[in-house]
Image 1 (cartoon, helix red, strand yellow):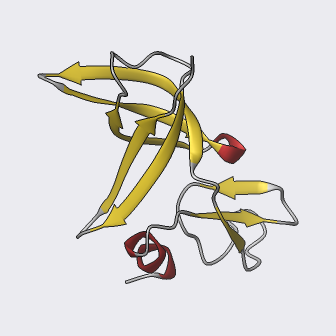
Image 2 (image 1 turned 30 degrees about the vertical axis):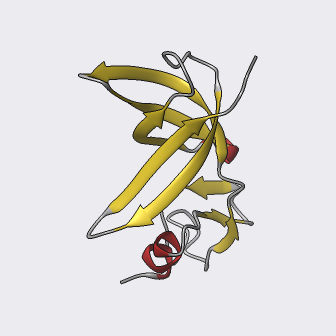
Length: 109
C-alpha cells in the first residue's frame, strides 16, 4: 500500500508534482520522471468540471478535470436531471483493491 492509496482510503486525493520541472502527476510518484528528484504533494480541493460523460442504464460516468489539468474517470451523481458538459462537481474518493472516484454535480443554476 502506498501513501497515495492510504490517503484515498481516508477520502483524500493527493496531487503529486515536481517543483523544478513544473510537472503534475495524476497518481503518486516517488520521484519526477524528468529530473528524478523527489516529488512534492498537496491535498486536492477535490472539485472539478465534467469534460465528457456517458450513461449506462440509469448510471452516469465520465471524465472529470480537476485542478492542474488532472483528468479522472468515475461515476457521476446528478442532482435532478442529466449531467451537462462543464458542470461543476465535487469529488469523493475511496480505495478498495483499487482507487474509486465519484463526482456529485453541484448546484450550477
